[in-house]
Length: 256
Image 1 (cartoon, helix red, strand yellow):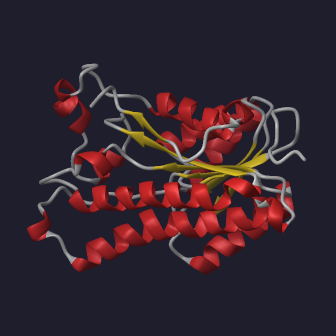
Image 2 (cartoon, rainbow, N blue to C red):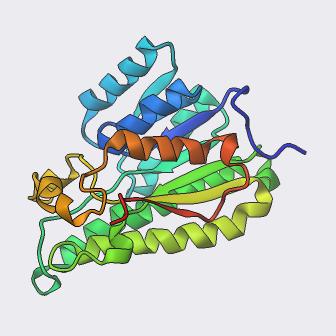
């Protein structure tokens, strides 16, 4: 019995937070590899539509779909829209995530923690749940691949900056391991990538727009990474070329 798609069949992937940064780079690269791509966004509709236009201009198929991943009702509607337009879902990239202003834990608030864990952890779990319900061979699916976007912060801890963000990504690592074991016999692979210092605008949202340049000397490779470098790893993990790879936490961090 075949339990996973191949590049020769029609297959669809949902990329949460797909309008910018790593998500956008992954969407374009996945489309180039033959995936139909659902580009999720929360508020940046114009950016998501631009990603869709880029994919379509190159001959690919894509759709933009709005949903705040921490809201269950919105997530359910998003998956229903994808079902209607693309049919069976074979891939999920849990990329949506947020960081807050750099602060020591003693100055952080409960409201900040609740928002961050709701989006970064519960949002990823909600989307994974819905993906499993569609992909599982036990439930009538044909298998698939889930890639969670974690962070090198999960093992570094991000002291004096984003300990809460690091903790949320450590939760994603544990979720990846547990879910991978749970659904391995159902034709679903679950892996995570852990980017290090990557040149995206997430640093600006945390009040540190030049963070990569400030810290690149601490990276053994002496530079920050690019969204495209992370995207290549994600698309490989989605693909049938990674057919025996599951429960992996892949560091993309320049040895930091």
